[in-house]
Image (tube, rainbow, N blue to C red; front, side):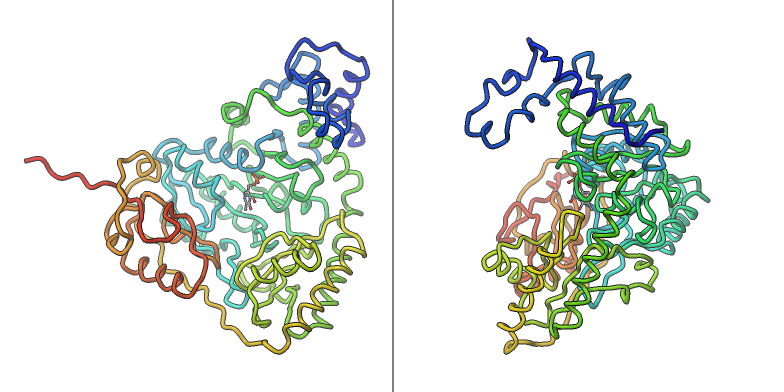
Amino acid sequence: MDQQRTPLFSGLLRHINNHPIPFHIPGHKKGNAIDPAFKDFLGENVFKMDLINIEPLDDLHHPQGIIKEAQELAAEAFGADYTFFSVQGTSGAIMTMILSVCKPGDKIIVPRNAHKSITSAIIFAGATPIFIHPELDENLGISHGITPSAVKHALQVHPDAKGVLVINPTYFGIAGDLEKIVSIAHEYNVPVLVDEAHGVHIHFHEGLPLSAMQAGADIAATSVHKLGGSLTQSSVLNLQGDRISHERVQTILSMLTTTSTSYILLASLDVARKQLTTNGYQMIVKSIQLADFARTEINNNLSYIYCVGEEILGTEATFRYDPTKLIISVKNLGLTGYDVEVWLRENYHIEVELSDLYNILCIITPGDDEKTIQILLKALKRLESENMNDVITREVNVKIPDIPLLAILPRNAFYAETEIIPFSEADGRISAESIMVYPPGIPIFIPGEIITKENINYINKNKQAGLPVQGLQDETLESIRVIKEQKPIY
Ligand SMILES: Cc1ncc(COP(=O)(O)O)c(C=O)c1O
């Protein structure tokens, strides 16, 4: 196929250049009825492309024309048998893949540090989650992915699972041996579902971790908008092989998707695919070079700030890594990652991707250049010199308690009658809420799990230490919503 073609984008341009007179939604009609200040800022063209699924423009729910062609080109580009465009982010694509394999009561093997769209899909599906703890990094205070041995063990105990879900790579760019995980799961004929929110680009450069499709996974939800050059909210769902029916995926995606799909988002997927296939390699080479330069400068010139490099490799969970992610550890500077995030914003207008207790994460993409890297380096240098006198060696504390017992399905907990009780009295009760402790961002319990004294003590200790504990409706953590106990009727 000719990857230079952009059938969807070109089809929209053809339509726009015909100067159609719309008697259909959207009612702003090519921007004529848009607030002038907004239109002034965005320009006219964006409103001309804000179209709807009229016949010449195809329909994402039943693609037959330009959307179908664009999806076929994307499938070839990603090495998939089918690619489905999502205008509801990777969250929508993740829910689709889980609902495509799980019926009520089915088991699905998932990492404990799963994105909330995974928990939502488990609730919608009425599935039973079989959790695997991700590997914890005691040096950085972050969690990595799940390992082949953990997947093997989970499948030995639950060979009837309907899927294994893997996050590859993690938010921090760390990947396990996905090919091995796939081969273990396929021995049980269990499909592998990949959360590839942070890995659209890895398919296009052999120096990066293997993509889901390259590793032989069955289905992958991939955020093109995060690192692949399309607009925010646009993602793809890639499918290969015959373990999961493409008709079922199309039906479920359609059930979860708005009928008013944005053609601006869809067109941005079409052009991002063209750019990734025709020029992606060179663009990624540039990102890697810039990131490697920044990493070397930080590690050679700064004493208390450290940027993670390939020395992280070598464990089962750290099989490959994405060097374009700068994991910058500030734990020895006497500051938290949150402090550093705020300091960078206030002093240099720098916005980081994320921060936690010990680190900040900066992503380097083809949108960066020497200038942006130099500003980051200058800022980090000043940050270190201003805090040199306060440096301390901080112990990383990422111990987490065992995963609690699941008493009822998350869906049943979600719909059950609940009551609010003091947190200190919750031992033995079934939680109706999730609670997360950072680092390493793993839920301590989710709806349906039995709260133990150990959980309560662990959360109280984190709270006393001033560590972020999030998720409960009551932000003071004094009370918690639990499943109401029914008194027996005699
Ligand atoms: C690991 C992971 N999975 C899934 C998602 C959801 O992606 P999206 O924002 O495209 O819905 C995110 C978002 O940050 C994520 O970090």
